[in-house]
Length: 118
Length: 112
Image (cartoon, rainbow over all chains, first blue to last red; front, side):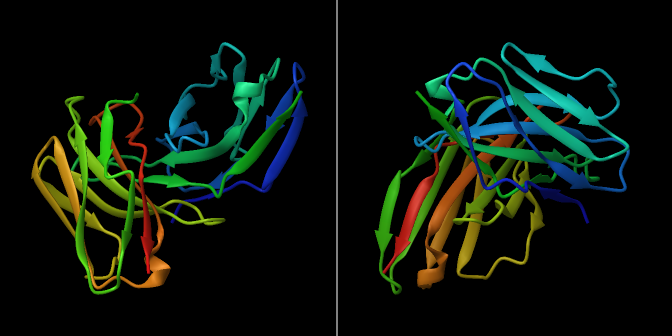
């Protein structure tokens, strides 16, 4: 069974600084997706960034980038130039290869609470 | 706004009550999901539907009963819940093929 581990329950970063959130996962599949979701106090889970396992190039979205190490099964999120609005819970998620039904299983870590200090 | 709407946002119910949670998406997605989010625990997958067919039941107690009348709507019927069922219940949808899951804002359920 696949698992996702986020070992940092809470992180703090000074505004305008850079922070890296860690995520490791375990799987025997070769075809999968990895995601980082952000959950602010409004509770809406919002996609931050996605990475396809078959792509060697690390994904980037503006101030957000990942360090995807497939062999090490590591998927960290780097937030550059941190802003107050980045404060939220961040969840790492794994999406399996599709079932015969065509649906997927999304497996989440326990989350990292990011505080941004002014 | 992600295109997935959940109602109600908050719900307080007694252990003998019957209530339903509603989820609606008009993104044209085929798959819909119910997740339970409790403090300090990973999101727990409860049910998965592909179009109107349930494809996964993750050993969820029978006091939770899902219903998917069409590919845009998903319900979670609740009856004789326990206090430990208090949690945030999240609905999500996703397309078949590439793409991520889109989540609703959740229903904060408190069982008293």
